[in-house]
Structure formats: structure tokens, C-alpha cells
Length: 494
Image (cartoon, rainbow, N blue to C red):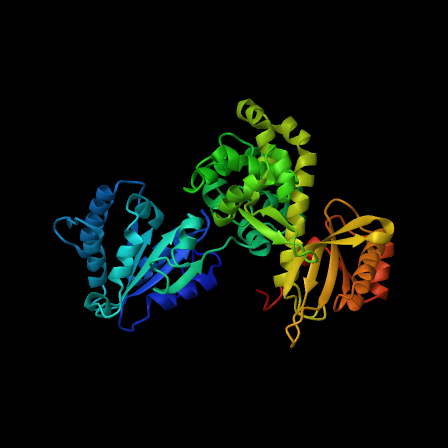
């Protein structure tokens, strides 16, 4: 089906949903659509129902009985029935939904499915039984049932392990946030440095531009600070409290104070479990559950060390949450009661650059290296890109490596393709290059496959010295990557 003209990007998602909804083969089918809040899932599914003449039902936080009445009323309107349909239980609802597909393939969307399941935990089993093989209601139907939700931990469990719906779904679609390149296009920001700053604050969530900022974007690089003040740091803007609401929206987060504290620890630079425990004044073992819950909810990611199997670091997935905990939470009371946050923002610059912008720039550089870099730049396709640490016994020090790229050869070995250093506010020079050469020599001495020929990549937000540019010109092993490179679209990139 043609993608709606008003839809930005989402070509892959629309194609998958279209193929699922228009499949004319006999037999009802189930699809599961998930993704973090504000990514445009509802817009996608409403557009699908509009294009296919399907039925859309958005659940509320309500009792089981009230939800049954609501779906009966909406089904009656869809069928143009003179009176609401009365349902005593959800088995009858799903049989009615299957009956919609007797004559043709019809898409049926149940949005915010976790609300319904919270009121009636038997719902996944009821759906399983409704779609059981050799059941006449299922076999004679071409209903394309889509269950959608933003509670990532719940939606992720629907099809996992021994869950009732495991093996029943013909589509499992996760709607992601926009990457930094598509986000800049969506926000209509052409300057790469400004785009990176905005992306470090609001990420790639589409709703933050349209509904939350009301299409207010930085007009030019000099307008960024003013934009922050009139949107994210303004108590009259929906973005001001959004990070707090994101946690409240997750049903698995019962003790929100604890989860806010864990996120605050990560946001200010305590990336490993020991550092988080020290920040909270707790034992490291006490954090297993809250960290697992935050990971299941999609709010944090556990990132392995490229060179140490037993070392991992945690990163906050949602930039607005990281910005809130690093910049806003320490001065929350002042932000709520001030009429002009200019001085507060000026005093927060070190926290913004050190705890938000710098780490986000590193993440963008790793993502670009893995998915968006020009083919052949690293003399191979990056199969895995991570951060890493390398010990230097002779100098009794340890090096942090911001970008470590591995390839994949025909024998399933992963040769080292490149190591890189990332600096946001510092002009990179020969000192940074020599540091990378020392790290490469250490890795070569360790016998790392491909280390001796690995590229040396310098990612700089503030530019490069003339000496470093000359070295890169004379030596093809040295790569200089600027914000302009990170935003240059390459044909065929993911």
C-alpha cells in the first residue's frame, strides 16, 4: 500500500504492516507491535486501519467490565449496528473480531493491550485459544489481529519462553526511535553540531517535535541555548516533566524513587554496577533486580567491554531521561520556581557537556561506525562495535577506547578493524593519534586478530589540528571523522 504522505520515514515498518494486513491467505493471523512511548506506533496503526478499512480499538486504564463495554460500542459503530454489542467476556469479543475477516483480510488493532491485560491477566491465554489451529472460527477467518503496547517489559514477554502466545505470531515489529540522521531531517536541522546537541537532549522521538515542542526547532546554532530555555527547561512545556512521566508510565517500576536514583547514578558517570552501588550507598548485589527491570523496560542498555568478557557498563537509552537526571534533577526546585532559567542553564553547562553531550556523541559515533559508515572505510564491514578497556602494564595505566570495531571473516572469526577515540569539545591532534597507536601496539602484543593493521579513527566535534590532518593525508590508516561525516547519508546504509 502507498505510504501516507504525512508519514515521515517508517518505510520498513509500513512495508511490514502492509504485507501483514493485506495477506489474503486463509486463517487468522496475529502480530505484535511494540516500542517505547511517543515513537508513532499509534499513528502507524491508525493509518493502517484507515488504509485497509480495519477496526482500531485503543484501550484505556479501566476495569475489565468497562473495557468490554467500550469495545462493544466501537465494534457496533464499525459494523453500523443500531445498538451496542454486549459482551460478557473476552472470548466472545475475539470471536466477533475473527468474524470480521470472513469475507476479506481485515486488520484489527488493539492498542495499549497491556492496559487490558493488567485488568484481566488471562487475556494472552484467551487470545491463544481464539487462534488455536483447527479451530473453525480461526481457520475460516482472515482477520489480521495486531496487539500493540508501550510497556516494553510486558510486550517483550508476550512471545517469549513459555508464554501463551509463543509460536502464535506471524509478525513481531518493534518501532524504534529515529537514528541521529533521520532525527535531524525530521527536526529540519541542517547544521550537524546543532543536530547533535538537539539529539543529545530529545533523541529521535518524533512526538517531541510535533506535539511537545509544537514544531519549535533551533533556527541556527546560536539559537540552541534559547531553544533549550523555551522548551525543555520551561515549566510550561510538556517536555519539562516528560522524563518523570516516562518512568510513571512503566507498570513494572513500583518503587520509582529507587529507579530514579539508579538512573541518576548512571547519568552522572557511574556506568558499572559497583559505581552505581557506591553512589546509592547500597550493596552491589541489591541492584540486580532494579537494573534488570530498567533493562527490560528499555530505559537502559547493558554494553559489554570489547576486550574484557566480565566487564559491562550501563547506558541510558532515552536521551531526555539522561538529560533530566544529569542536568534538571539537581536543580529541579529552582527550575520549577524561576521565571528565567538562563543563569541555571549557564551553570549547568559542565554537567551538560560532560555527562550528556560527550557520552551521547560517543554513542552516535559507535552507531555510525556500525550501521552508517561508507562501505570500505574500515577495510571490512563492522560486525560488532563496542567500547573497551586495554591495560598497559609497563606504564601501570589503563586506556579507555571509545570505539572498537570488529569484522567477521569467512571462518566466523572477528578480526579487529579499527579503534577510535571520541572528543566533543576538544580539537584533536597528534597526541590523540599517538595514544591510539600505543593502544594498537598493546593489542598486537596480546595477539588480537587484525590488530596490527587496524585503522586509527579520530572522531572530533571541535575539529582537528593541521598536523593531524597532514598525518591522515599521508597515512591511509588514520581516519578523521567530523560531525559533517556523521550526518552525510550514504546510499545503502542501514
